[in-house]
Image (tube, rainbow, N blue to C red):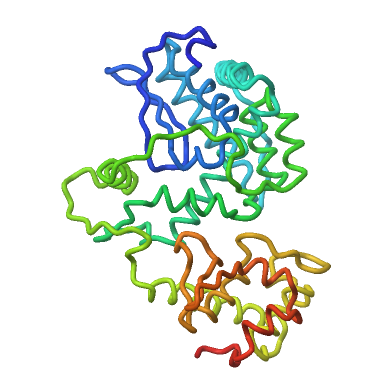
Length: 363
């Protein structure tokens, strides 16, 4: 990208366990910081767009001032996007910030070969950052406070989850419009993307990455949780965590979903098959997270917890704990919860799995 944009190839590149691409200019030179989790969702072309965008800003003589100005403007734009009782007049960027935005967008377009792939890169980077945070909350130790254990294979777990599919990301027209203000040269393409959904799935043409050693994995996770001082951590992998942790997670998620459905219906659920039927038919729209019509089950659906909870109690196990809803039975049988849910509450697949299910209460 440096050669493509005719920039000096002096940038140092660092890999991290965070889902973002950032830049830093200091006394030691220019640093490009690439989050490995982003490489699971970005194609090579999309990665070029973000790298080109950051390189163009890194090699400015006023790079530090530019970073401060863009960060301040970004805070303003996102603050204005937050619903407030009193709507203040929308501010416009000053000429310096506008020039920085245009330079970065032009570099992204040149690097990606067009505005559309560059817009996709910006949108995916935005939703992947949120999706990765949700993944960490769902599968790892709490993010707040100092914890005595961490997953050394966190990035590998995320990559597995992405390859299975995480469903539609938290993406809408308002988010697209906000990003369009930050990327004026990509505004038309971003606005068009805002009219549809944006699923978090594996990139079709990812950038190959040499597998990290265990030591390197631990190093980037330690940096992610900001433990630079020597702190004793007990390192685990997803496969070595006791199964009861995932059983408790499924039970907690299922209990919460049952309570939401019962509250929306104004009655108790008969059992988990009844819960699936309620979600499927859209009888409790607010609790189901959609409005009107039959519910289409997709990866990341909350209803997966109902099947997980039921099967894990019967001696099943998760194929990989980072991937929700794919379970292996004591006899080696493999079940994908989404496929079961799509078959319908009254299907033979659901009746077989829940044939001995008890009431949908805390058991």
